[in-house]
Length: 224
Image (cartoon, rainbow, N blue to C red; front, side):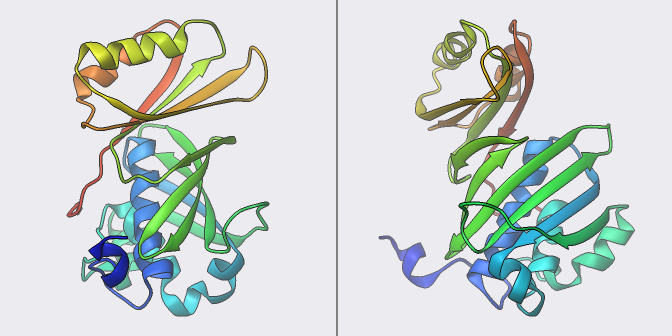
């Protein structure tokens, strides 16, 4: 346990789970989309659905999608900011299986036509876990620089990607693999000890069998 776990995050209240964690989920979704979001459908699960309105969860999620940090004073007014920045959004409720009660499924469309579906949970103290990306199971926190690679399920993809990282001196902390089925699309989630430079991501994008690459680097003061 560290000091952050005891004191909690620096944030706009009222709740580290429903507010700070929700902002971080939005930030992760924005980063993995890789472009400015223009449309968002957000399906709340469990206590996010039942008590989120009173805790500011809705505003917090939109604030994260806009690039605000948990301690930004503009978080409560994120709906108005969304109108100014052309982000259309809608909320619904959905029962998700085998996830934390504070969970949400976000469907995003970006300004350049990119799409993302991400499921994530707020675990308390501002900590989050992404449990799904584009229908494939994942498990990562966003606390480390993270590379999410969509690829064809074919031999050599994993070794090619990790080889590029090794050449750049980037150490792999964790690596997760999942696929829709044999020979179908797959996703690898690689948490690293160092940030992934844009040039490295572009090299990986050009590899055979790679369909899409998104990078996430933790930031404490991201704003629009």
